[in-house]
Length: 144
Image 1 (cartoon, rainbow, N blue to C red):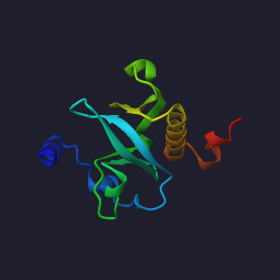
Image 2: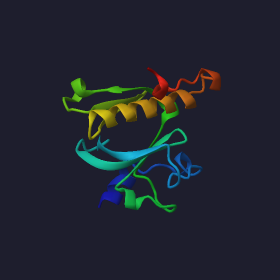
Image 3: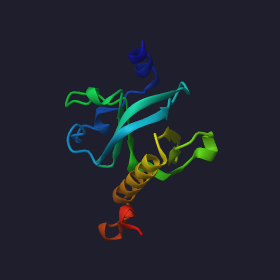
Image 4: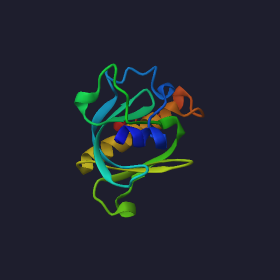
């Protein structure tokens, strides 16, 4: 039933969104986040992978294989901001990722993990932005 729902609503990502990314190998960041559904606004725990400017999610780490199809993909090049959102959704360790069209909400398991995800995604946004040269990339982890 869920696969039918996903195909009807367009929730399945296009192969072109992730076909050149070996997401199963050496990701930049992985971990559990709780994500609000795009159509049915329930909260679900998903396994996230950040690699090569894409944020991909799966049901769990065991479902990440070479043949896997992600449950969703966001290109960070389309993202405008990533920032804390506890005050917006009234949940601890929450953050949001915004594009010109949508805002997605996530909940990490701790404040430390929330900050690490924000830094990793923020760094990826800067690295994959078409308006920034390599010499302008900021390493958020090396800040005092």
